[in-house]
Amino acid sequence: MAVAVGGLVSLPGWASGWNRAGIPSGPSLLAPNADALLAEVVEVIIPATDTPGAKALGVHTFIQKIVTDCLEPSAQENLTKGLTAVEALAQKTFSKSFASLDATQKTELLKTVSQSTEPDQKGFFSMVKGMTIQGYMTSEYVMNNIIHYEFVPGRYHGCVPVVAKNSTSKNQQNK
View 1 (spheres, one colour):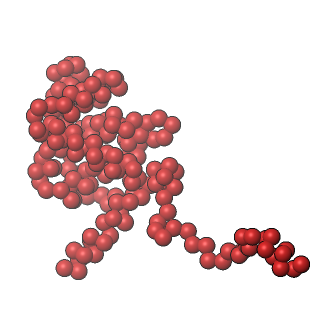
View 2: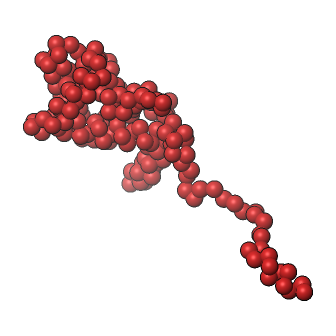
View 3: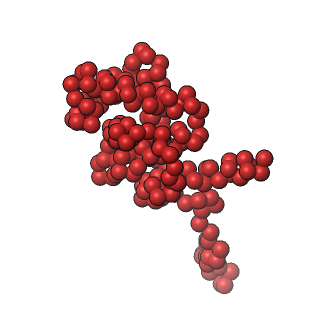
């Protein structure tokens, strides 16, 4: 019971302000080619602009870690099947792998997956999109450089000078 409570207490601290080096390595859920495909998918969802994209921040590694450690086996299977479906759809539609498509084609293909009538594909995209946003917004780079987040309770200003709000009342008392 104590281990479970300790894990629940430490999880929010780990998931907020994480960086790639902070993710403990372990057995990877995905094969290297599927990992590269997931990296390309998250980059389409949050591409690099004047700030790093999801791929550069390692959000695909974050997603794998969350899916492996925190979600049930059906979600793990949904991730692997979804990536296989994305690659198959890219081959079928454009006769190229997803990684070799241009940005417009990748966006179009993921839009097709998100609007699919198949619940597995739609569920895959919803899961990956949600985790991509969560992983990106809680990454160390975004928390420090964009949001400028400070842990609660924030700054402490213990010793500040007290200034009279109305200096005219002092002048009237002196007269």
